[in-house]
Amino acid sequence: MENQEVERISSISDYNKMTNHETLHPLVSVVDFSKSAPICSYRRTYAFYTVFLKDVVCGDMYYGKHSYDYQEGTLVFIAPGQISGVKNDGVPIQPGGYALLFHPDLIKGTNLGKHIKDYSFFSYDVHEALHLSEKEREIILECFKNIRLELEQPIDKHSKSLVVNNIELFLNYCMRFYDRQFITRDHVNQGVIGKFENLVDDYLKSENPKNIGFPMVNYFAEKLNLSANYFGDLIKKELGISPQELIHNKLIDVAKEQILDQGKSISEISYDLGFKYPQHFTRLFKTKVGVSPSEYKSLN
Image 1 (tube, rainbow, N blue to C red):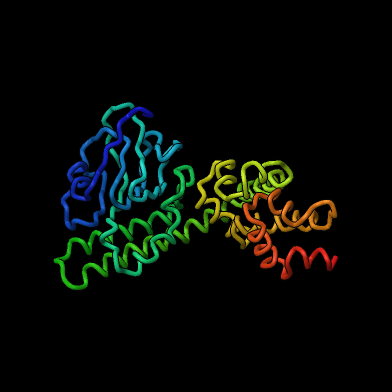
Image 2 (cartoon, rainbow, N blue to C red):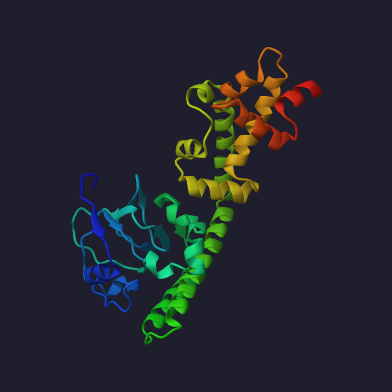
């Protein structure tokens, strides 16, 4: 699988041909895989947004660097340019489920186009897929049905806005369902938060800030085997602050202790904490504490 060449699907009509579907609109499609012929799976990259709803088990889904046991009732979101594929050893399989495809050009100039980055699950790793309840699955299928029905209507001046609005509605439901998943996985999330806090504490106590630099969110997300976006959303939902804010808060606590240690200058402290320039440290400290490091030292 690792050595397989990546097949690029550059248009929605090309994907429709591959899955034996009529192209009703060049920039959007709803695919019902039960109507497709058996196909071999490859590693692919798409020039459009792709959402797969899985209905049958057909092997491991590859996405980025990870593989995932891609089970029934799972939604996977793939942004343009990301690599994904299903491992099945080259044996043709009958796919099941549905896919929603929409090209970035469809949403240009629309409210959805302006806010598509807010749907951060398009950048989650595959092992952070959305697992649907039966009721949620029914809602998703209703959304797909409504998009498909609109595509089957003769095109008029309302067509684009109605299709885009239905896609936006679908994505908003997915945001709600991800919120539910964060809550129902609360015990797992608490473990992640505990590990994250310990990792930050250990990082700040070590020589890493001096040698590697200022502690970055991506560094800790990678240590926890999570995508930066999923990690950020999880922490924000659980703690009400971003991972970066938590890092800043812990860093300021360490800085306060070091400022009160008479053996170090403010510049030394800033370099030891990973800041390239002392003025950046001073700015962050003043923002968080209300006074500069020097003023804090004199007050205490």
